[in-house]
Amino acid sequence: MPRHSHSSLLLLASALGSASAFTSPATSTALRRTIAIAPTSATTRSMSVLDAFFGKKEFAAPCVMGEESIMSPKAHGTSETPVQKDLRWKCDYETADRICNFNRHYAEYAGYWLTTSFVEDARNVAKEGKEITFYDSNTGKPLFVAPKGRSMEDFLKESGSHGWPSFRDEEVIWENVRCLGDGESVSVDGTHLGHNLPDSSGNRYCINLVSVAGRPVGGEEE
Image (cartoon, rainbow, N blue to C red; front, top):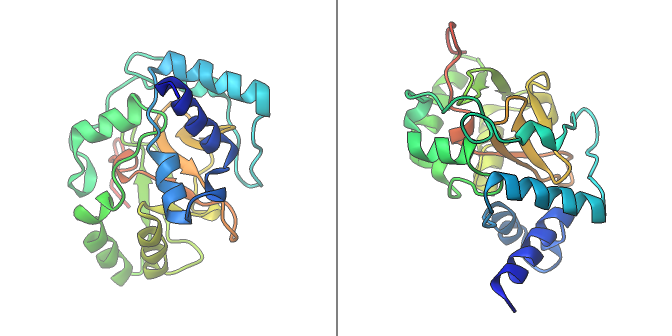
């Protein structure tokens, strides 16, 4: 089978959510998040073709759906600006910029977030009875607040079981976050965040830490 045909089948499997039919849950998640992609303009066309054949997914409320145009080419990939230089938790700048701005499907490797200072910081925050606000690595806008409706340890445990920080509906700041028809989670400014991979508990936003490691513009971190 030609390479492009094989890639197309993988992309279709991801878009249809059919990967779970022939892989384990962990492998299915990894498959969906590591599919090779073409440049942004070509990817936009591919998504349009998929939508035309299979229709867009509509995720259950309170998930807010967005249009593919959010991820149209801009001054810096899909965003107007590169990621901030001094990202939180010692996240790598080049990895963050590539994933946030020049990518639609690739992810930081599973468990990357565990190699940063995030877990230690999260547990210190939990000791103070506080939550963590996660900011867009490009714009500094707030995107997620966690944990809500659960403990920090529950949040870390679920994230650890999937390989990436995993947020639930009540932890999303919907003013600044959208889901596209194929499940891609993005900021309203064009930052690639990750994917919505619903499970038996509802929507689950599997997010790259490097995409939400920004610092608030003109304000203190929470």
